[in-house]
Structure formats: C-alpha cells, structure tokens
Length: 522
Image 1 (cartoon, rainbow, N blue to C red):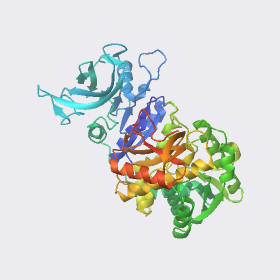
Image 2 (cartoon, rainbow, N blue to C red):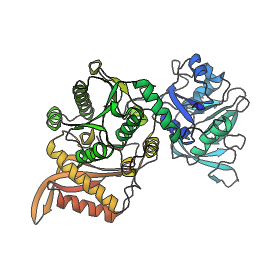
Image 3 (cartoon, helix red, strand yellow):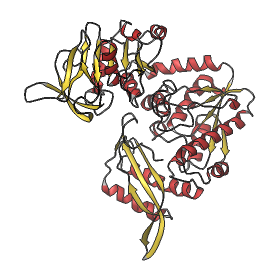
Image 4 (spheres, rainbow, N blue to C red):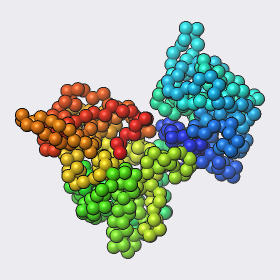
C-alpha cells in the first residue's frame, strides 16, 4: 500500500524526530533525512509537504547548512521550525540577526495575528485586548528581523516581532517556536493543520496495515535464509521477534544472553513466554562471568556501553556460526535509539549516548542487519505488538535499556551491585503495580549509586549502599517529567528495600526532568 508522505529535513536538532512522531500521530507517513538532500531525491520522494527542523547553527553564517533550493520550487507546502524558519527567511531574501533584543528559552506567549490558515481557530487564551494567544516553547537567540518578499507576520512576542511568518500564495509557513514539543500546548493541532489541511495528506498510516507491509518486506529481504535475533525480553526485541516469526516462522532463531545485567527472573520469564507459549526457537546463553570479567574496573558509561555491545556481538557471532544458514542479525532498534546515537540517517545531531544496537557492526560479524522496527517510535511499537497478538503485560512493559543494569549501576559494574539492584528494582515495580500506578507512569526503575552512607539499624551503625528511585512520565521519551508519586508509596518502597535488601541503607528519589537530565542514569 502506498502512503502520502511528509519529508522532514534535519538540520541537527535534538528534537527533530519529535516532529516525525507528531506527523505519525496524525496517521501520515513521514521520513527524516539530512537537510542537504538533492533535488532528484526530493522529486523521487514525492512529498505532500516538507518540514524544516531546528538546529544549533546560525542561518546567517557563511558556511552554515541550508535547505536545497528545490525545497522552495517543489510546489508543495513547506513549514519551517525555529532554525527552519530562519534558513527559509535567509534563503528567500529576508534577514536573520543575532543579539537583537533578548533571547527566548523556555515558556513564551505568542500573539496570533489571525491572518493565516495555520493558526485559524487555534488559541490557548485571549489577552486583555481580545487577541488570540498561544502558549509555546521557544529556544533561540537568533531571530528573523526582515521578512522575505511576499511574506507577512503570522505571530509575534514582545521580544520577537516576527515569531511566525507565511506566504500563503506559495504555501510557505514558519514559526520560531517548537510545535513538536509537548510544552507548546496547541503544537499537535498546529502540525495537524499543516499536514492534513494545508498539505492535504491522507491519514492512511495505520499499524494494522503496517503488519502486512512489514511481513512482506521481511520475506522479500530474507528469502530462504535464516535469521538470528537477540531477545532481551523487553518490548522492542519482543515485538521484533513476533513480527519476524510471523513473516518467516522456523527460519528465526532467538538468542537470549544472560549477561548478569537483567531484571529479576528475566531468564525464566523469557523462556516461559517465547519458547513454551509462542513456540519460537530459543537459545539461552549463560555469559554472566564473561561480561563481569570484561566490565571489571571500568567506570566510564560510554566505555561500559561499548564493552557490553562488543560482547553481545561476539556472542551472536559465536551462536550464528553454529547455524549454517544464518545470514541475518535481527535487532529491535527503534527510532529513539537512532536519534540519541546522533541519527544514522542524518548524522547532524550531537551525540548524547551511543546504543549498542545502532550502526557500527564490525565486518567480522558476517551477518546482514535486519531492523524491522527502525523507523517506529515506542508507541508505534506497542501498537504493533497489540496487532501481533502479544500479551498486554509484555507490550506495555516499561522500556529496559539494551545494556541492561550496566547503565543503571553508576561507576564500576560488579555482580554484587547487580544482585542488590535487581532485588531493589523488583520491589519498586511490585509496589507500583500494587498501587495501580505502573501503567500510569512511563518508566520506573532503581539506580545503584557507588556511594556508601552511615545508617542506624537495630541500634547499630551501618555503612551501606545508596540507591535512587526513578520514575518519569512522557509521551515520546524525548522529553519527560518526574512522576509525582504519593509520599506514602515512596516511603513504603524505601522501607521495603532497606529492610529486605541487605546491603542498602538509604533510598533517594530523582526529581530531574528530561532535559536537562536523561531518563536513564549513567
């Protein structure tokens, strides 16, 4: 089935893929590509509309990134966001300057001038003068100071007179704020207006249809060759396994690696679910000692990730060598993995952290890469899992990082620390479920801190480890707020961990948002 498509050109923003997620939420297919794609690419992509992302760059600099002029001659609507607005203005004859007025970072109130299709009927409140106002999120120092010919001001703030502009004759729209983030309250409506009403894209991107499309693609790609998949028990690898199994059945072999960095009873649960209930071919590899030896003395988080990733590859290579027809390595890589690894497609964004399952596979692996979920966001993966008939408990399980507890143990990883963390984490999750809050928060876990503190237990002095509880709420995993859990619940969890997990005498709660923190600790 063919779908109408929106092309998103990435200039290096950390939230570019949030634009893609919002477009997908409107059931319109889209792809993110580097800003410097060729005219031929744009023509062959045949988009219904084009969106230009933000960036950490300045549009007025001589050697800065620009959109292809083909963007403005393709005959389709174009939406510029933040830097996308600035480069649109600069390229079409306007002017962008730095240091004019004050910078805007965070919450802002934008006045709509009521003269555009993009904002028509969309407002958060009216000011004292009866003018339509929008509550938005800004992140800029540079600003457009002169409109290109044919453009008019669409919205403004006191410090940014041109906070939005449009040339409706050509279908060009641009906003200085970020409609893709949840902090812009009407951001979803604005993007929907652009995609559905201005671009007239057909909302045909439905997970039920995607299953058949994905199955057909996998069969065509793999043929009669065998696939080996690294199964962790998490949502992504589980859905990938179910999807590939539907496509090629017995040609799939799943490998579960017990690296000593898993959640409590993970090994037993995976065997029960996939081997006994789903009938997948499953190989369980006990590699605890191997991983712990390799991680001994290593404290740097990036180095730990790389060691864990390298060992996973080695284990897969060894297991694949036992399967004469295994030609493919399947992974549950999803869009956020790619984003935070600097975007394999765009190579524009600054790296926040690497992911062991994103790119960079060595030639010695001798396996081709199969990533059927690579272009899906977490919520789309869950939808897909439901369509595939996976149990709700599995599909809606909180995300678990590829390196497992290796990134939730700060500093050096030891089996002793992992054992303590497993028990503490299981208690936290158990109490969240008992309180009916597990499905209401997006991700919750415990972090082991390489810190000891003095405590008093049974009238005696203790000197034991500290752990931190972490719970966040998010719709996209690109931004997140800490969960306002009941004090009674936090107290109960703390008491249980301290009383039941010998070696821990202090529990703290992380109240950091993303940004500036990440969801995971490292």
